[in-house]
Image 1 (cartoon, rainbow, N blue to C red):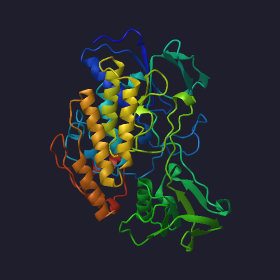
Image 2 (cartoon, rainbow, N blue to C red):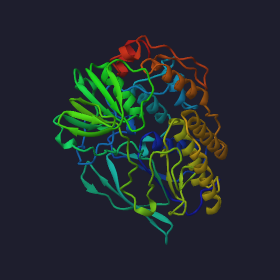
Image 3 (cartoon, rainbow, N blue to C red):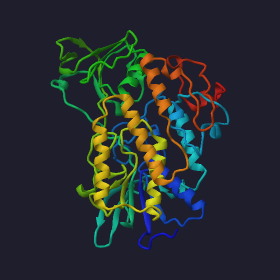
Length: 455
């Protein structure tokens, strides 16, 4: 199918898993003989990979920009690889053998990079280049993008694009609440965004604030690497796991006086450090108000048709990829990108605005009735499968049964669930059991996997 005449260039902002999914799908369509417009992908980091890149720094980078990454030493995936496996590039294909279901960060990044290398995607990425501002020009029905070359420390000439795809992720700007008296605390106070190594807290007494996945993982990491004791405080109440003896749960933190922290139930304890695991903010400071998604971390963000098309401005040519709260990750980004590519290429026609608004309302109302983890998994599975049907995606991405089993295993044992094995939906391969239990596996490097004959 011919490209619409008015379409000339696509701007993709971010070269993490979401942005690279856009580039990958466009490249595959080009291989199929389709006419693909010019594509430019801007990436502020020095390499592709987004959040899966590790950066030892915190605060700002060499160019004075906020550090994007939130990864830390010894981080392993908290859901099985069988839930993130891409159907056209399986783990069997990449590694050539069965490997464990739960993988260290570096192994996941190696897998993702392998897929990107099968097509000409990386050459479309302008590394160390940050987007500073985007505007929509209604008279021309296009966008102007201003970017800055961080290496040469210079503003680049503004460029025109017919479509803009925001794929920057939403786990890089920390949400940091204020608790009375925190300024009197003499120890270290940090957000999980700046957490880099649990060994820093060996022998320490810690307070972890929050009950998210990052709180769960940092609690286990700190126990694993020798923290003396940890109190976990949250607004939502106990998480309900059988924690190691070093971990206690308390209600919400109320105030801090020196090293003593006080909780809503009247109890108190002394701690050496405080770690906020209080989530992140969706922040797009390069976008004006009329183009900016404003939302909390939810399974269906507002004003996005099919969770992708921004309907408030931009003539349906501004798209967001990967902005939902997530069970599905890599596969959801892939089908979102495939759907978006088909719209951009003119292969899929969008309905009238009223129809799109009604569809958003339908999904929003459905989400309002989600009250449990199982229902949230069902909701996102339905969303992903809806995109598969709408776009003509060639693979069935439904791995609800694996997510359900994974959640059951987590509930049974938060310390050992990563020791379980799962079966690939796409190859039928049963994963290999890691020779060491997760709580005893201290080397998370790609090299360590190789030495254990896992890769």
